[in-house]
Amino acid sequence: VVWSRIQLGETRLESWVMSAEPASAEKAREIPEATVARLPLYLRALNTFVDQGTSGCSSDDLARATGVNSAKVRKDLSHLGSYGTRGVGYDVDYLQYQIARQIGVTADWPVAIVGIGHLGQALANYSGFRSRGFRVVALLDTDPIRHSQTIGLIATPPEAAQEVAEAMVAAGISSILNFAPVVIDVPEGINVRKVDLSLELQILAYHEQRKATPQGRTA
Amino acid sequence: VVWSRIQLGETRLESWVMSAEPASAEKAREIPEATVARLPLYLRALNTFVDQGTSGCSSDDLARATGVNSAKVRKDLSHLGSYGTRGVGYDVDYLQYQIARQIGVTADWPVAIVGIGHLGQALANYSGFRSRGFRVVALLDTDPIRHSQTIGLIATPPEAAQEVAEAMVAAGISSILNFAPVVIDVPEGINVRKVDLSLELQILAYHEQRKATPQGRTA
DNA sequence: TAGATTGTTAATCGATTAACAATC
DNA sequence: TAGATTGTTAATCGATTAACAATC
Image (cartoon, rainbow over all chains, first blue to last red; front, side):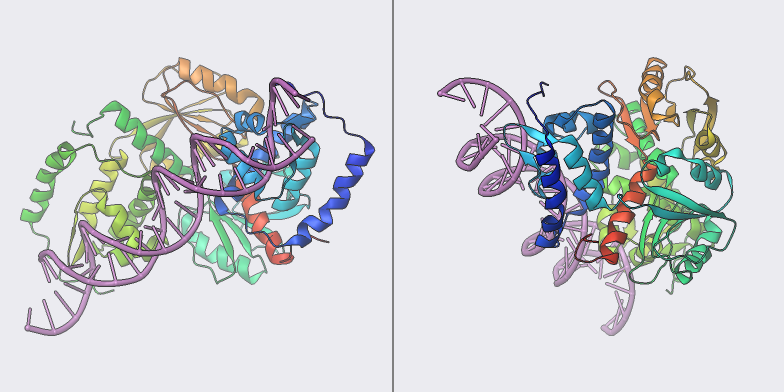
């Protein structure tokens, strides 16, 4: 991929700092969930481009770096606005900023982890969070600290998860990432996502099994 | 939920052991990926029903236990075959067996973890794997052991992930679960899934941000 | 100008959902 | 028989994809 004719003067730099306001004011764009889930992938790719000193990239570059096909990349990015240049591509810094802004990771999000077992401690030490805008402010055995706009992370055994979730909600936490393999019940307006470590292995096992005995498990 | 009229004699028990063979021989059913991803949820719910001594359940019971609506539950289960009874519901043991068989977790899957940092150690100690049919047979710093039909789990820093993936493939591993936040390149036929611990937080942050400033981040 | 690449359109595909006949 | 619940159908919805006009 040849990418050399991009000339980024101060003019351009200023212009995108200025354009940030109108873009968010235009309308509260509804970004499809499938797209939202891929934005972090693009952001990660853009970060590596920045590290490599690459100033521009095409949808095809992003496609190869993320494993998402280029048509989907362009469609996804079009939901954010028209931040590319036809015949040229995307400015890495500019697109990085726009995606980070959309996701909301230009800010620093406090994270409270409940559960001090192996997993909780590993998550507390996980360097990937910090570099992506999440700061672990608490690692607790039971009660979440009171702090609004904190994301709560449940790393307890499944038996304790519901109770912990309720304590988190009571403490003013409205976003919860649940690592306990159990469905938790929360009031309306509380956003819950889950990471099921076994689930992914089970999906792999399903496909592995199909490979081993293509006609189904008859052995 | 009243569930008491189910009478499960030996006749019934024998009949489903017998019916297992024809079911898998009939045809190699194509189960939609979205359904495959939910089967572990149903299995988990059925396990808790068994623990509670519940012998039967309806699609609505499964819906409440998994957070998936009942129409979807029935549609999903219909891809496996007709294992329910109209007007009655599903036999918990029977359905548990059928789903476990479909996923392939009636067998015991060996798992090799590469990366002995906090995350690798936490995953090695994670009790949820064992109880769901996955046995950690190796926790290694660099090279995966040679063992076919092993699922490899990458818990290294992102820089090492590609190299580890290649070593795994060379060692005969054809299913990989990647915890490193980087896209890995593997040959055709190798099944890769990924768990991105930051990605879920980023999706939460997106929605959290929308709550905080509904019109977009203009502050 | 010629070549490259975006942003958008329209077609296709797959997943979700509601409704209900079948049937216990 | 009356009540309950499945399994399936058909409608709807949302996501993916290919193609290409717009445009640098």
